[in-house]
Amino acid sequence: MALPMRCGTQSKVLSIKSYKLLNNLLLLTVRKYAVGPKKKPIPKFVDFLQLQVTGGTGGQGLPKYGGFGGNGGKIFVTAKAKVKNLRQLAVQHPKQTCKAGVGDNSSKFHLLGNSGKDLNLEVPVGVLLHTEKGDRVDLNKEGDSCIVANGGIGGNRETNFLGLRGQTNMIGLELKLLADVGLVGFPNAGKSTFLRAVSKAKPKVAAYPFTTLTPQLGIMEFDDGRRISVADLPGLIEGAHQNYGKGIKFLRHAERTKLLLFVLDLNPFQLSEKYPERSAFETLLLLNQELEAYGHGMLDKPAILAINKTDTDPSGEKVTRLMSLVQNLPESLETVDEELRPTTLAKFDDILTMSAQNRDNIEAVRGKIREVMDEYAEKRLLEELEKKKSLMSLREDEEHLKTTFV
Ligand SMILES: Nc1nc2c(ncn2[C@@H]2O[C@H](COP(=O)(O)OP(=O)(O)OP(=O)(O)O)[C@@H](O)[C@H]2O)c(=O)[nH]1
Ligand SMILES: [Mg+2]
Image (cartoon, rainbow, N blue to C red; front, side, top):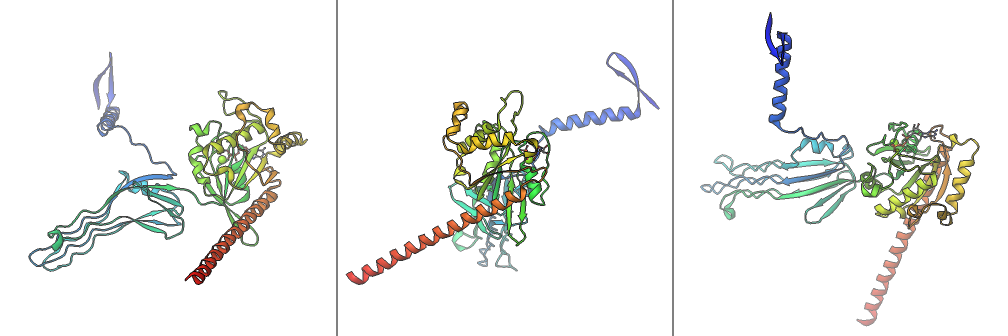
């Protein structure tokens, strides 16, 4: 059967099928506008989340029999290794609020009301929890836990048998990955290629900037069982500290790393036509500047420079030129524009060359990372020992003073 319909000036006969299709389209449009603007989808990697947490309200008491209402449930935040980021929590609480269970009311047959159900918010290991009042707690180990909202007391004589409301708090959950090594570099330098070469991780690799959009973790395993975790971070670009590019907001994941591996492409880099082309040396200085501007002790960390893509320099000329510029810092700063010169220079424990793609010299870089990490770990241990020793001798002196003057 055909249904006659007028469409614009042209008269057309539409079949029932297309009429229904049109109708559905119209309905969809109406629904879309009735619901309001589309909600922003939750990204795959969530590393910051704010939540309003409210403990459960206490149950009502029973004045006639002196019955107590159950206490409201509490809210905990607990670190769990199986949780990889904060996305799950963001999905479970799309309105960014959560409440623990209400305590049961006291009844004739159940004078002591049961407590409300506690709510346990599971977060990844490495989360920094902060409250509005400025309290900060690190949840750095599996099972580390913290109460963020207490439940209200159940109704009793003192509360006139009324159940009290639970506490409400605003909390911030900030994930800072716990990796030993952080890979920093400009886009396209070969960070992800390096991670693929040294671990079983399979981050995406492609010949365009910003392939890596969220931090990726991999583990370097050594024959003697030693494991070193490596975080591949999205690339940084010049002006990153002014929020250009995508890398800067992920630098927080490098804050807790013990060592930074600067990955540098030995070829010039140009993000787009809007940006000037930068030589490898200039790129290194710009990266240095960005880390300096970010602060948080980035330049105080042990660091290794890995000059990548040696396969593109068969004669070795580019590498030699770059090496001499890096090794002659700060004098070689004279060769670049003033605005590219960092105030504080990164200090490298070693400078190595590699081809992450061909896996040339990868073993040497892996070995160096381990060596430098061990060196610093030993240094820290010795420093702590010295501190303990001096504390102990202070105490001994105090004891001595007491015995002489008392
Ligand atoms: N010739 C050569 N190409 C390489 C080497 N390492 C990486 N590449 C190429 O360089 C491009 C970028 O590599 P990625 O590993 O994705 O670079 P990235 O630093 O992770 O880049 P972003 O994720 O965008 O920050 C890819 O086309 C790689 O195949 C290398 O040693 N030699
Ligand atoms: Mg990458």
